[in-house]
Image 1 (cartoon, rainbow, N blue to C red):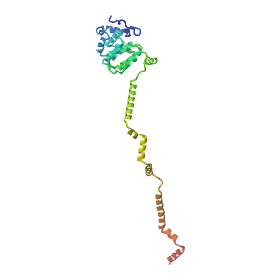
Image 2: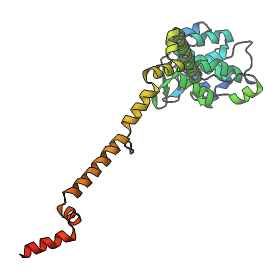
Image 3: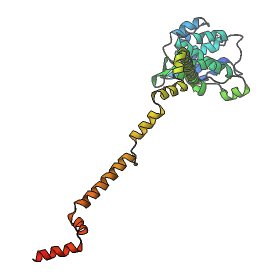
Length: 289
């Protein structure tokens, strides 16, 4: 009688709930000392105390010995608690192993759409879990464990029932699109930046806005420098090839004077031009005498 399913239990996936666990593993659970001593006559309320005492999750270990986690899972399948009680198991944040036990039970017994709606919020739980298998103890996390329930076909040495793809359920309208926490965080940052910019624009006074307006900038520039000043700066700074008339005239005058002086200073040119032929003859005759 201790290994039979409770009366009035509903068939899950067309069979007895206990048959969701493979026959070999189920028989080993029935033969284990933990099942006989601690799982006898458990109810949905008293099972909570046993789940709180769990120290790890897993399937079989050692010489194909089932873990306490598997024994309590089979007990849940046997007593088949109500949906409201399972939701309370999942909402108990302080008892992570109780949550992990309820998550695996939901994955095995609920419809595909309900599985996604109930288990996806648990992906936000990043607490550590100890996992025991044939190789020993390993470290995992709650979100990784829930993700394996949604993607893999075998978890804790138990073959999971077939789960419909999420894209198919979205196309049929059974569930809505999945919300990404990353996109939500990015949208929240954008909203904060927009609110900050709005608050800054509102905090600025009208005088500050007017001082930063394009018209005020143009006015300040016109006051600081007039067109005449700009022209002066341009003429003084840029090298000009054309020289002023006064400078050109002075240089021309200097050149003309230098040329005239050079001509007047040369004695040979002035004498050759000033002496006549008659004087030249007399000079020659005087020289002979």
